[in-house]
Length: 199
Image 1: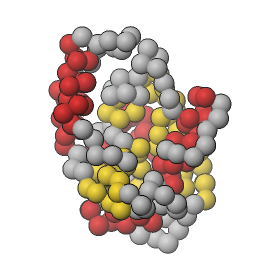
Image 2: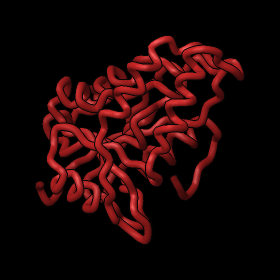
Image 3: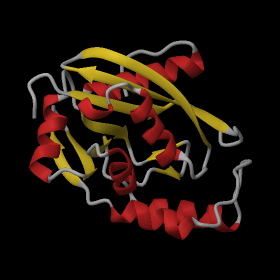
Image 4: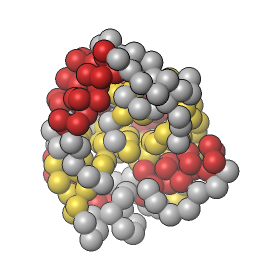
């Protein structure tokens, strides 16, 4: 890992499940310094998140200089699941997902199964819910201590010690790595007009 390595942090903005799309923000961060910010959109509960994030990597101008793509969780816009293995293959860049809490896979399965049968609250049906669940279950979660409390990561294209090292070195304050924290702040501000703290 280079001393001045770059990470592309990615997060989606707030949305309602009846929305067609949601904004997704990418922020290229080098040692706490922002090199670039990008925006795209993905379909709510859609299937285009892997392609959208791959495009952010290509559009960033730093594709060959990124140490990792770091996502706030493995889904954007509801259950628009990012295939982290496929994203790594397409971009040649290691991919790391970060979550504050260990995902409750039983609750996720129940929610996806319901979307596959009888979606509620204006949500679109998700007939391929089993494939999406399989993508999420494929991600091996590892606990990492970056601050006062642990976070959970999954990764592709990088081994566990290196993934932990990237996450730890990218964390400035608190538990959440700075690239993800900044992407979250900007994505929220784009939708609501203001943002602070978090995620």
